[in-house]
Length: 286
Image (cartoon, rainbow, N blue to C red; front, side, top):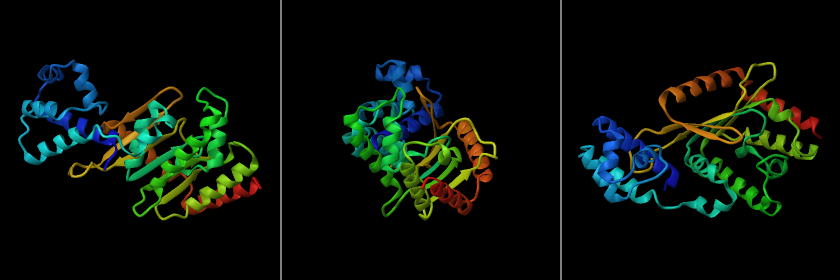
């Protein structure tokens, strides 16, 4: 079953579309439920759900009579409160990062541009430990390090198994040159990148210093609709800063990031040349 976050997101998308098709205002929808307008705003952003009774009231207001559409919404309302696999990792995942983790796990395709750090899905445990121990406001207590590292390892399983997600990474050359930990840690990390680049579901490209890049990293995830919905997959852009993160799914934003991705992947070295550069970096760390 899809994660709670994904089911809430698709519930919000469906209810927003139905409301807009009938020209019902958020105020009118909220009045029908006897709730504040913020209830509808958060619902349509995928930040909270509905009871089955609330969903039925809104479906009547929105004049939704198609049996398949009604069944889809009621199923999402009924199941979006269930916690999934990642509930057991809540103590090791910051509150603001939990939606991202669940989107990541449900994604069938990842496109990620890394600026300075090797992306989490490609990190070795030792590289992750160094990242967690580096100076900064997001420090992890020493007694939590092993659990956080294990959570990262568990997240990486989305790239393995019988039906692994497709993943395409464009990494700035900085990811190879920026030194974290000892030479041994970096050598191991470079060899791991080279090994991952051989997997049939993974593409890794390096954007060399001589090519203009961007001043920020981002990720585009394609998330299939929860079964049995027939909705199109959702393309979701994730952009993170020190204190905030944005989830963008409106068409103009997605198209802008898709265009930026097209430029970066075209400007980067091809997969074979990129792997040679990664192995060359590994030799430098020996």
